[in-house]
Length: 153
Image (cartoon, rainbow, N blue to C red; front, side, top):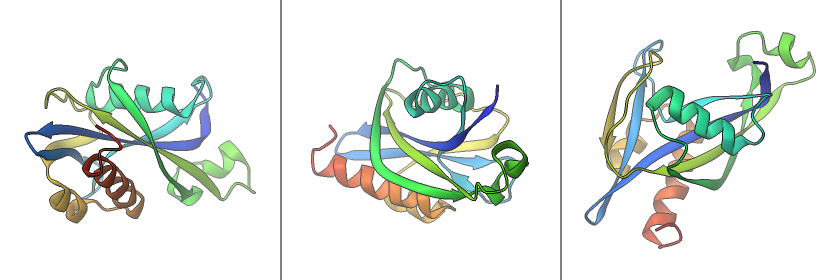
């Protein structure tokens, strides 16, 4: 599969009484790097949503049948973060967009891939503290507020 010129971010969340828990993942290839599910689109994926569903399944065993919600948060990622980016997308491609999604889980069952050493279900404050990347924190803030405001049930 060829790498598409965008990135996706997926935030698994679960309601627990009056609280909301978010699943954060510790990368196995980077010391103390906590993030949500992140991955690249593939040219074969018809939309960023399809990419998000594929990445969620590959990295955490989350079924594409779960309810995914696209968030408004969109970030730009420097292509220097990706191996061989200039070869894949050309010398003039300096940034790619990151599309953000939330997926509501009915249980805490996650099956992580080799990309992650572990995962934890945590509240908003803990997730915000642990996350390494600003794009993850912005998407978390949007999702948490939409849940609290009843915009996302």
